[in-house]
Image 1 (cartoon, rainbow, N blue to C red):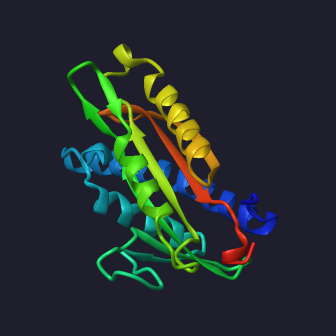
Image 2: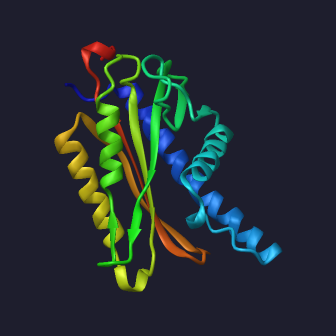
Image 3: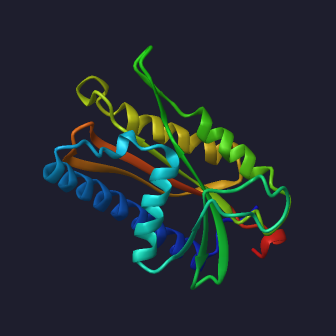
Length: 203
């Protein structure tokens, strides 16, 4: 299993930067909406489909063609990745899952097992076209005074677990300071991992 080709990896890094910028813009817009309406539109209260729709909108703004709740090219039609995205320079259609981390009050810790579960499912895809896939993981800080950098440290451990045990490489991992734009959270961490190239999917 080789690493990703240069062109695709560069394009995935551009996509990851767009995800980070989109997250900042989304939080800023919701903060302004709160000022106008007095209602709480915190992104931390959104379910995954809502977050997926928000991120897709920002990706489209910078020129990516994005389908939400897409279908894989082959296999069980009930298996639907969160995103289908066309990479124009690489001329490849890729599939990405989105997973938000779960917060556990008992023990004051985050749980990342569902992100690993998604990687396992992606890794089990046997159709070569479906193997152009990856994972976006997103987490928000809660009670940051108590937790400090625990979310960031947890994501670094998650990345290590993914890249050491599965044929995926880290495209990007970033801690985003929300600068009090979201009263529920002081910062977010977002990561992107993508399946390494193989001869079966064109290198």
